[in-house]
Image (tube, rainbow, N blue to C red; front, top):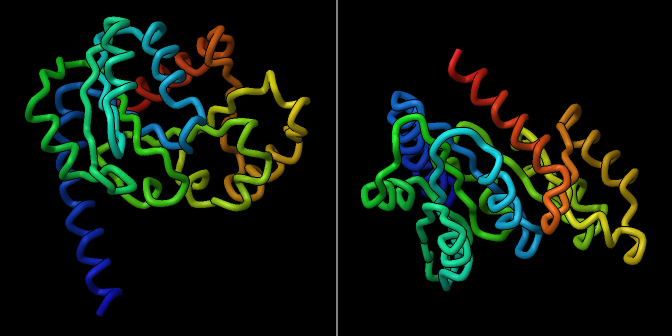
Length: 216
């Protein structure tokens, strides 16, 4: 019985997510679902690529509680909107549907969705995105791809952050990349310095290319 209930929840979510994606695509909106642990650098990624992507952009910030990141992005002039789940460990399609009803997402926009900090649940739920992007930091350790294969396997690319502290904490980038190749062969990996923005240009260019491929 539990399996049937879980299946029904997933099916209903997936149907709504597909409808959301179809509506957004019809308006030329390209949607990116950004996943990763708390503190991995998801908001830093949003901040850095927002400065480099071409065209209008809107952001949905997901958190269990508080709107700290949303306010920080708004202070930079980013059109950011907040979802507080009140305890849920991931965003889902009904949450996105509800917040989109309050937003004024322009045709041809980028829509970046920063999901709840979690390496498990957010990977299981689609929310209407065109692609998933996983952020992983050196501070988390090089074993994360092998420990959490689903989130890497379901993502279109990985952003690797905080490499400036890799030596100090014993992060083995080679082992990390080997783990990625084991669970998600060929997955692009983009190093990013969230403070200086080094690497953000390549990520933005890759996203522009991904959007162009969808529009063809």
